[in-house]
Image (cartoon, rainbow, N blue to C red; front, top):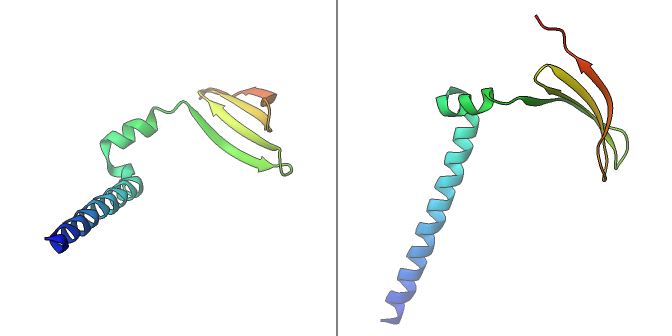
Length: 93
């Protein structure tokens, strides 16, 4: 009777690990093929903010150029509060 309990516990563990691996694979697959999925296209197209470029100044500071709708912002990012350097209006087409 003892070996049956051990076998049942090992089989349950393998089943749960298999489900975890299957879930991780499915998430990675959806991430790679997400551009074809209508639901993920809607999520990605509704973003109003995008990061255009990030450049490291030193080990603690970096500069980021961020676009929000039709405005571009240049920020200095550090351990404290981000500092806005420049705000630029994009020309409308």
